[in-house]
Length: 133
Ligand code: TYD
Image (cartoon, rainbow, N blue to C red):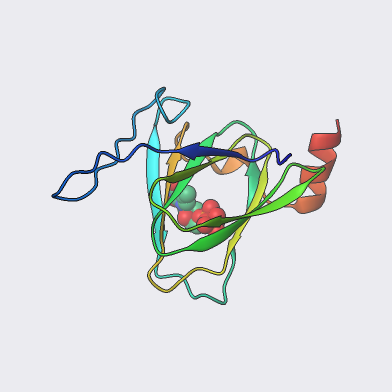
């Protein structure tokens, strides 16, 4: 079984369309301190390539599609993200790489902490060392 935790978001749909609610400590399992989104990515160019020491995140592809390679140091899994009701939890110490962005992709990320470069591990060997301790 994969270590990746997907979160099925409820969509409140009616004849006018769909509405998804993202509340901290509800479907999103932490207080949300920061939201950012990635768009206009060249399909040939991957992003990410890091893990976080303390920040938890939930990624949602709200438009288009992309793939997220998740790696906990023991297992690697690639998740296709192609639904605005599909959340993927990027937990602490999970190396992640996003690739195969569709031209219309908008990848929104909710984070449990404010931006702090010192929370990033951007070197894969350092990540493997940190998770094996
Ligand atoms: P980076 O984390 O490298 O993006 P990705 O993981 O998608 O490849 O971030 C790109 C730049 O944006 C980098 O200079 C840091 C900056 N940044 C912020 O200032 N605040 C943020 O919340 C994020 C996520 C990035």
